[in-house]
Length: 178
Image (cartoon, rainbow, N blue to C red; front, side, top):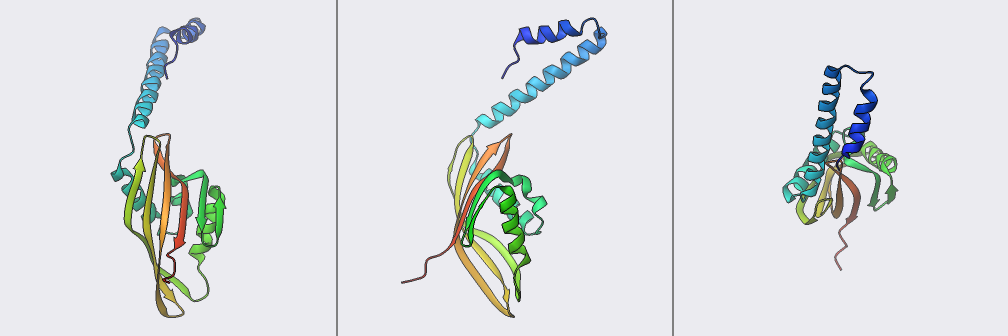
């Protein structure tokens, strides 16, 4: 993404009568710095997302989510995220926020002890996205009795503006044994 030289010359010519040469030089340096920064971001987004990046993102998301404050994970959830859980579909960041906050409130007699992922398998990565599957584990106490719920999960991550975000998540319990 290069700024055409004619466009730069036009800006410089328009400023000549209003700006000292020192300020003009400073403005050119700032403009050049911005162009280089934009080129670095484009180059970075050209590299494939690594499996390590995916796993680190998942671990960071879970650690922050454990604090039960959606503001800490908000930027990690895409604005147009689509989360599918056993109790419904939640489309858009605000709907996802509501689902998380409802879960964190719990119910009568339920205390969550821990939510974590195991069996993480990165399925695919490219420059702009990654998909991963895992087992989720939810442990807690309900009416003074411990419980453990396991299920399967899939997440699709996208990279926008150099950062990963969850655009899709699907959680479901394991099928009952026949």
